[in-house]
Length: 274
Image 1 (tube, rainbow, N blue to C red):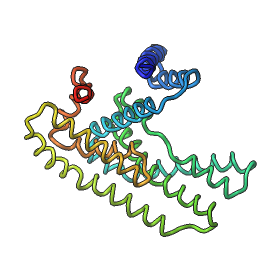
Image 2: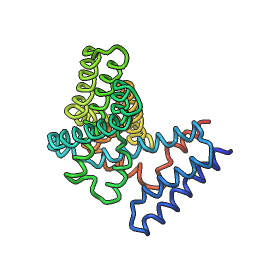
Image 3: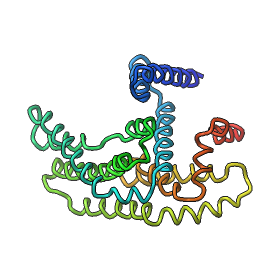
Image 4: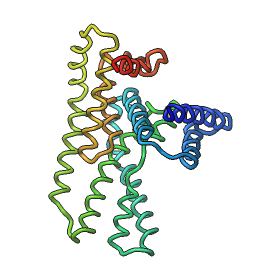
């Protein structure tokens, strides 16, 4: 019962502070973040609530992927690599310089590496509010986030190798590159075709919201796979949405996930099975 009250408090706080910040001309998500900080300060966190928040972020990135254009995503490859490279370099340098006066140099390298991964969920929310998600700039930012995640994993692997043994483990780096390359290749080049074929057959299932339900199934599976490859689960969620966004079922899935009467369809089904 306490969890239900906590969820009610979270929703009310997020909406009220989001409204106040919107009236002040600031992004709604900024008010929601401050609301979350306040709740985190005064209330003890709960593992169940944490999983709810993770699910929310996955759905947000999945919807962002559905709204993105695959061809535009491919076209911004070079600019996104430049953006990601500069972002990773600056983050690493700042982390290293702040830590270096207080720790050994190899530990400072590790602190710098820890600073390289960034959260794209807040950026996505702001872009959605500004209706800039499906622009060239918005797509560049999202593509840069994908590259950023890969670079972050590589730098962290190198840093851990230096801290543990003083030598760079080239085998581990090669394995990561191969796994990540295969993962991205499947989504960017084969994902749309596979999604179209798969969901054309799923649409024949004569059950309410079968297409949307299986879209969520694939979202969870590929988010798990991304995490298994030491990538962010939200990267898997975004790429899944990006692949499904090129299929003819895109509008149906998007409308079902964003329309109020159907948003809780999956949850309602789970409750009815208990």
